Image 1 (tube, helix red, strand yellow):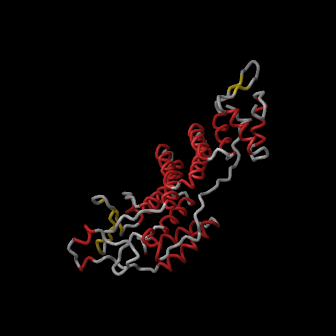
Image 2 (cartoon, helix red, strand yellow):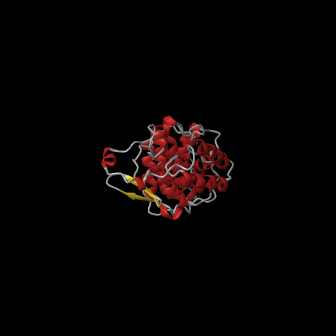
Image 3 (cartoon, one colour):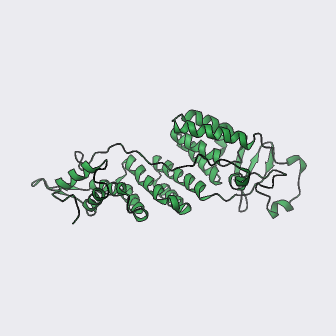
Amino acid sequence: MLPSLIPRPTFHLALVPFAASILFTASQAQLYSQANPPQAPDLAQPSAEQAARPQNPSADAPKATRSVASVNADLVKARAATADKQFELAESLMNTATHDRPDLIYPWIELGLAQMGLKKYPEAEISFKIALGEDPETQKQVHAEDFYKEGSGSTQISRNTAAHEVLVVKRTPEIEGICLSSLGEIYIRTKRVPLAKEAFDRAAKADPTKAPLFLRNEATFFFQIGDAADQVEAANKAIEVDPAKAILYYFKAQGLAGQAIIDPKTQKLTLPPGCAEAYQKYLQLDPTGQFAPEAKSVLTAANLPTAAH
């Protein structure tokens, strides 16, 4: 180990951009809402199987208790609060919004982001799974009056006041990407590495335009918790899709550097395969970057040039 040469400086994470302008509109409602109330042709309509079932007038779908415009207003406030690290306020606003309109997707996402800020990882996991249309058993712990259950090929939501089956609505790539990458972070923070890797891979596949960011964040999170082996693996994946990003080579080099050895007699530093090359590539791409002094120090200690030949 090289504690004097391999510090763990603060790294400022590049978060997944989530467009503040994306709210709910009538034309987007089929994508962003799971509800199918009567006389709402712009929302998801019942399937043929549902339409063929006998209707019980006493079990009509519960009416939405808030308008989309009202939810949008609180969504804007919650995003601003999260940006200001006022996570308690954001959580409170979105708890109310998801209680009043559990059929809308974006409030669940914003709730999950606020809960992550508060390090409420189990609660955030539930929120993102609901946004994805999955069926977390522990959802009942958050909204006791709601429950999710698996039907024949579809997800159903019911409330104590009335049973109401709804369609599974296809999520946009942005929704899938932000939810899956957020779940990936949660799994890393809670030491569930296999699930984390799967979630980030799914996020990159779901939204390829943001794959470089998702995979870079995966490497960052492993770096933050000191998981060097998985940090290197994530950095290698990210390099494949974004080979011009300097920080990825630093993550790879820094993760490998822990395997360096010092000869007790000669005091010569020997770096593991790939480490020197990664530091040199980092310096090539960002010669005055945040970690340039560290990279030069390690290479010099190993009696290696700072530039690749």
